[in-house]
Length: 227
Ligand SMILES: Nc1ncnc2c1ncn2[C@@H]1O[C@H](COP(=O)(O)OP(=O)(O)OP(=O)(O)O)[C@@H](O)[C@H]1O
Image 1: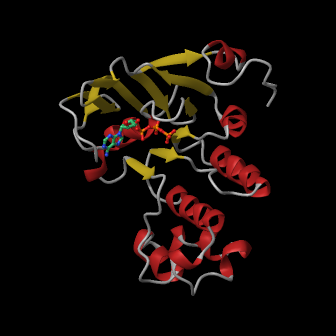
Image 2: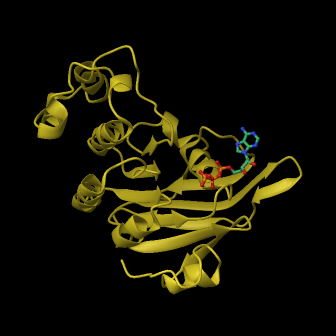
């Protein structure tokens, strides 16, 4: 049984007349990577922001270990969120960013010893390539003391070699964390996830085989579904 459990239920969210999210239930435990797939504009980012607590809706039930939170991000030790867009300060070096996000020195080792990142430590976030920055952001969040990570397109712009390394990194943190991950590199999501959910028509549908993604029209018929 998972040590910690995140439960998301009864989320309602409308954009104008359109009900974007209407039948949402998902659960994620530590030790799990839940892959959230869905077509452009179906509401994946909106859902992650609602779970994190930075997007408001009156109708939601977000609980961690049975305790209900309105804005989980205001509480330390619960969630971290990797947004689609850059989020790190751009006026300080990566070294200072590491000190800012990870004030405890023992948390910094993995980053400071990372051969790929070392040569960039004096640069600012905006001076990295998109893929380098994504990799740095992820390593940073993975070292944070939180139970769950919400990752919005972690593989975006990342070269294949490092996609594989990120997959391994996520797996290596499973003993202490749970992940909710969305990305259009669905093959990477299939490889890394223990469980899959398709967000379609405002609802979360559990997916038990990659072929179901074809049946739901998320990937075209004839697409190879092997990992
Ligand atoms: N700031 C906004 N103003 C108006 N509509 C918005 C806004 N943000 C999102 N939406 C609407 O919500 C829908 C869902 O957006 P969201 O970013 O959650 O989708 P997504 O599934 O993450 O898409 P993608 O896969 O393209 O990243 C969009 O189609 C858009 O119509």
